[in-house]
Length: 256
Image 1 (tube, helix red, strand yellow):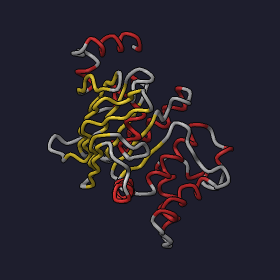
Image 2 (image 1 turned 135 degrees about the vertical axis):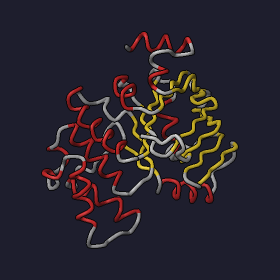
Image 3 (image 1 turned 45 degrees about the vertical axis):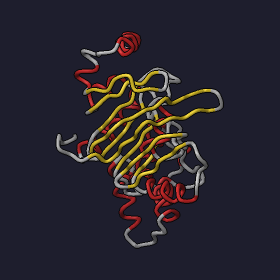
Image 4 (image 1 turned 90 degrees about the horizontal axis):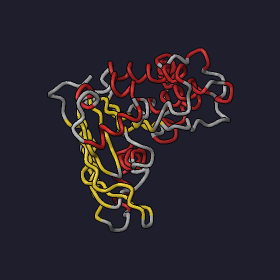
């Protein structure tokens, strides 16, 4: 959980993104402190996932600035430059990403999936890598399936393997895009349990989710988005019990 005096590790300022004539993000700004677990909620199509992908430049914002642990990238509508790509690569070394669809390599074992990114991206070949990868699989409860292939795993196991793979890059911040939406509630709880453990260990996490129970019980801060904008941001006990904006109240009435 976050310390009140914890430093800001991620700052997004006035992020804009359009696809053709459709404006998806209309000036989204957030600030995240070290150790915070932030849940982003809102109706489907409101821009949550696009905003999350803009935070590590899997989507390039049209305008705005993203700063992560001293790496800052500003966009003003101009062309994407080589210097921007260099900065984005550096920024991604601080940020892990877990997707809704797992994205594990089917031809690799669970262990090799975890080992791949440090080998390819960081060029690591040290003798302790396998031990570190096994320790990560232990953390997410998958040590016993390290030599199996993704197709033989349940959805919850595959998602936990994806979390271990992201952690293998030793990120300071983890991003999750609807990590449990493809899972049934019992299996989803396995994944959410891993995220709670990381929160207890001080990992900074930003989660796009439709799971209101998780957002309410596990978050330090909940952000409600609608129509490409942040409508309201507050601790969960405030946002869920006494939302200040009518759009937030209307949304919560439909999902709770």
